[in-house]
Length: 299
Image (cartoon, rainbow, N blue to C red; front, side, top):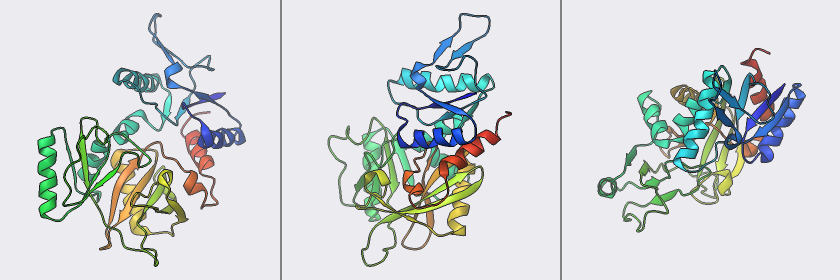
């Protein structure tokens, strides 16, 4: 049986998953969503997946590549259509849609009572300027993020006294997404900013790490250094609440601790990287994911 892993760039993570599937007796194949075909010429709709003569019982989504609005919608539709035909999508396509959109993630977190920084989303520059001015009166710094984005790319700190950048196109794509900047407690003597990545699989915290930034951005892709994080009940429960809020099978939950001690969820990642986490834990994260994936299908 072939298990498709949807990705356009398998890389290290793809290799780890393929090895984990092989250890479990399955052949994983890398497939790009853009190579799938929606065939509606027969009596019943067919979704044709490269390397698969028949629909597999499940697919592992490791990436949905960007493109035009039409291309992205078509790729997501392939996942929706496969799900409608009884194929398990891991992670579920609705969960991916909920978390790839930071505004929806923030909305769901707040709706379900999960501690998350104050957040504002708007399209109007006038509204964005009003938000900035209000924050400035409270001496509150903001973080600007692309609505769709990962690995810390395009993230910018906006100091309380700082005006909105001109032009804005390099920071936003028609939508302004602001979060209140959470100042972290200083650690050791280096006074380095840091946050945490908590990895959740099927309602359980499997591993956590501290990400120590070389700048105020702590993402591993942006140069953050990883350390294993000891078990923390408060942070673990917050991560589980965040995963439940977006209704997801597995995820990487980004959590920050304020200098005053409170924990806040920054983001929930539905297609999380775990190379940094793997470097500081003896657990085989890919195998845990594959075991969970296989437990959900009848084979």
